[in-house]
Length: 243
Image (tube, rainbow, N blue to C red):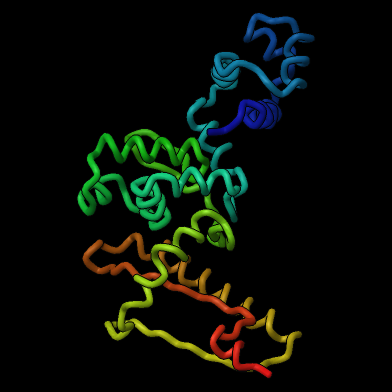
């Protein structure tokens, strides 16, 4: 949800666009001009006052709040505390993964044994955590950037390492559009970051395609998990054989 300070900053811009003076606004609010100036300079006020200023400027409060929320920078990473909150409840983690894939409430309830009230409750939790902004009719806006990733050594990735990695690699990777590549080699230390950057671009392309294909009917889409990694590593058994 947008903070009141952000809303006040937006109101100042709207006041300027409307070519309304502080004196005009003071008259509309039945306040002293000095009080209006002080209130706007402080940058914080009750939402009822924000609503009153919106009416004076003839703008919709909900639309202003939506525009301010949409302009907020998107998160590239959560805090450790936010991730702990997500991974603490497995159903909440499931809903978090679903919203990352832009699933609707109806799709989640139809696919998993989660009741509608339960799912709405989990969406509300994700709103409080900061992953989404919950909107009317149980719709939401994802507050994560396209380059978002779970913290490399954070609670969520630790959970996946302990509980999911073996399940993922147990597959044959021989289905339609599936594949598993393992490449080992020694390359220049100066070039290694360039290869990692290319992997990150592949991940971003995949995320962008996911966003684009949400317009397609569900029957034309299939869920895929792309796992990319690169590290300086040697199998422990081989390391023990070193001289």
